[in-house]
Length: 308
Length: 308
Image (tube, rainbow over all chains, first blue to last red; front, side, top):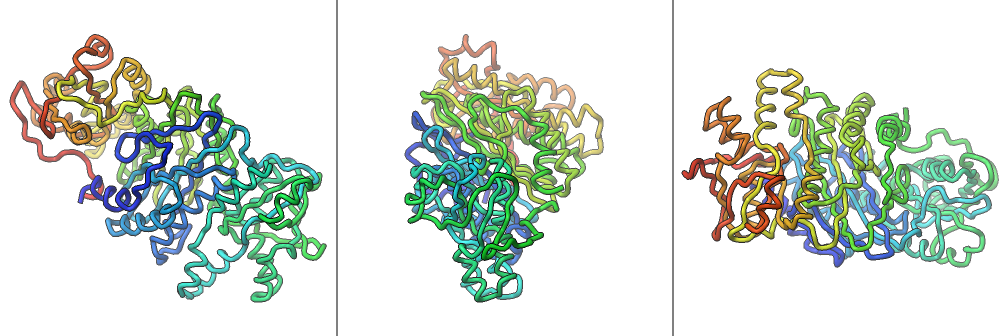
């Protein structure tokens, strides 16, 4: 099968959806899209590699599905309406292409998001680079640099479960439930849009760990942040299973649950309460402090870092 | 150095240009961009891998520069004004990141194109996935499926030189001139815009070889194509160096010169003459025929194919 036939068979045939804003896609030199008047384009790109982002023996469909959903999570954090995905796939063989196509289809089917283009290359390790794009009304993107002293800190989603599942997998537990818990990423696109529409202007998604990503937000915004662990529902759950220290470590530094963390003025509390859990407060100063029942915790490892 | 510092140092610091249509870039979850009213967005993505798209011992700066320019060539083929690039880089080490950053900077500096985002991951082999985007007036993109029976076929750029240089490199000739000839890709962005503005509606860039890419165009448009080799300037040059057969092979199947091939009605001849060379004619029927002085050539290998 030629490269062109392979792309048709493994990818395009499984992903026939075409977005209403698309003019040209699937097989031209580039894809062409409309952005409605008064809207802006939002773009993000993520690289995922076997042996780094998922274990080598992990099913490639699950890994690919996870990679696409993780990339879409960046659009959720901006409050964008996701429209298009482009995938560059490095593949060991044609069977890997089929599995990757299946995983991408699982992520995108019935999502209203189009696979608008891509490229494949034969390689020793399977990997995929996913570019995602969406639209939002001009000037409304939720940024990292918009937190203010006095803002509440809100959490939309869970923390620590993906890291726990990955650890179980690495310890030899390959049951379906564990695999599902690690591979299942729900990009919080609908929640991101509702947060943006509700007036939230500062948000980040948690991919590297709550502390690491909150620090990005605190640094970009020039504020300090104080997070109370006992207010995070998954901490209570993991504490019962694993004890306080381990649960704190998983919730604060375990990445890849793709929860959204946002900040908002106190006046937005009523709007946000049905959507998110209030987990702390922005303060003047710098850095992120993690508290448990009012006492500061000392956490050293601040998240995952490929080149450390 | 952490991943975040590395990205700053190896990439962002070398690529400070921010496009006037960019609202947010560099370090948020995603980048945000305006698309002017009445314009469309054009996007393409390409994967390039050491050992496949460039020899392992090839300087990574040159390889990265080449990869970015090759991706931009897809925007040229649509007639788009290039605005933004996003790079996903798999890198062996921090030194590779510096070299890749240097190469991307060489490609983009003084081009008016912004590095709007990206991602890095540590890997065994160096590779990069490049996503490029630009804009053009609504409904004016040059497509593959718009060739008509009777159209002239035009070539803008050279053919065969990159394949010849790669062969010389593989035979041990590592002189600067050979390296330059292989690594130097000039994306024909200005020419693409002028072709589009001149009324051309059908274009492709030659990355896989003239025959293979012309066949994509012929198939998408439902026409046959007849190309006369003696009309291609680089054929004459290579014929003197290498003889007729080898020159025909390089010009027809050697990929990666990134020339533009377009078709246009006879009425556009005066417009196109200063920009391009007329190399053939579209006919009713199917497939691409390569002629030399009016006699049909029989070429079997139709271009490069990763999974063949």
